[in-house]
Length: 97
Image (cartoon, rainbow, N blue to C red; front, side):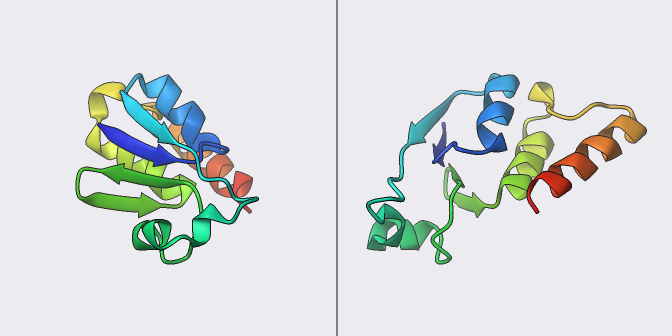
């Protein structure tokens, strides 16, 4: 099962769209939970979101969505058409800036 911290991002929409089972774990940024030793082990930069897939840990919304796309092809997030796929990637990169 995938574990994701703080879904206040596009990752939430991607996971819901994919239909993949996942577990959500809240990280209270106001209380500084991202600075806990446990969270720092997941992401030394102390940023959210973080995806944990078995022993693999990944942060950054775009990287997480691309990883999900490549690993779980049966639950595709991006269009098959190369032009539409490129436009979706362009929008996701613009969104994060």
